[in-house]
Length: 166
Image (cartoon, rainbow, N blue to C red; front, side, top):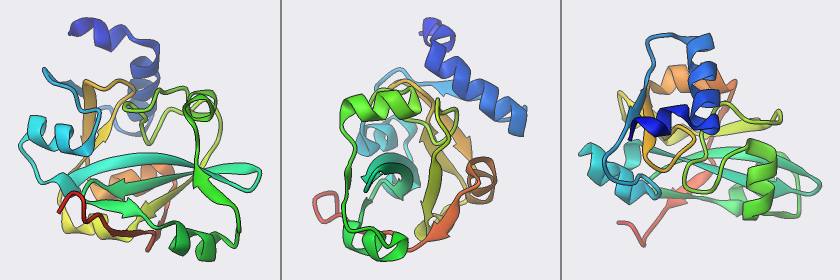
């Protein structure tokens, strides 16, 4: 498990965290946190406290949406907010190329390219949030306020309840 900490993507996340606050450390999980449900089970926390980092293609650019684990990104809300007609999930290659992470380990920080970040407004339900740290078995714990600061994210109403999870 300690080899995860030497993974290039995980090192990139820890560097971004250190630049923001050296007290935020990456936590290695025994079991995978590839999905929000897996992460919540591994951490024994509410699924809504898990940050899903979703890369979306919007016309010819990309945006990262941070969504609670118990919700899903609302493409209709997003299209209206960003005034783009063509918004869809990025494919695995686009995710890797823009963030440097594979799906299942996409972190809100430490991306290869500069990406605008939109943060769902309903994260304020939780004192602490848990986000992927570059690998399906690595996460970090952060407050909603610090997540907004470290990502330079904008808080918006960009989610809807995910009935498949509830």
